Image (cartoon, rainbow, N blue to C red):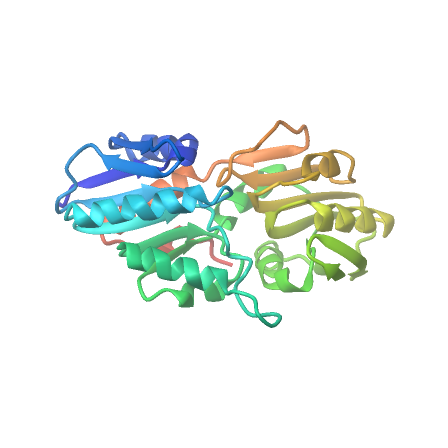
Length: 310
């Protein structure tokens, strides 16, 4: 069978090392040098000729993470790698997935073009901001779902009278997946924005009295929407509020907002490292799931076998 090589980008080693441990294969050697002006110069320090190469790198801020991934993929392509997969646990720039106003970019499509132009043969990621981003690529995309991690965790909690909630109308499909799996009701927090990261108003659609409510979203940035939703849900008579958010972007006053909110617990994945500790944040690892997906890819087995049936 063709040899597998696992590489990590500079800022994703915390996760890539765990993936490599679960896979049972050490990370291959790569160095990223910098010129005096900060320009990156990656060097792959072992042969990749004919190999299945997996580059593990989330493209969270700063944008150098994306640039580093592109340069590594290009280096492998020029070194005659047999098959190149970009494993991107958090796919940055995915929030700009359409033209919602004049003269704005579709950044997710641009990033897709860049990855393909660099030489990627396959993309592996988790919880796109919008499912249609898969269609921006003309190469295979393995779109893993965090519910394979969260559902077993929630089952162990043994919560009673659970209701799932979407913090906005756009996330209804995501929250409904959990509601269908657990056979519970779904409520929606309808919000109105005047500008990005600033909520003008919010209302709860549905009955939450006496319920243990779990908010479901793909990412949490400033946590403004999430905390506002939790506060309103508690005012409506809920027993408790938790949240599942795959990608902990957590910028600005996010940590303070979470600590001071009505959220009992915020459960996130390790697709992005936390910037600081927070007593309310619980981190679950994606390493085992990505390791299994990488193995299935290499062995030409089904990826859908890793999904939770709803």
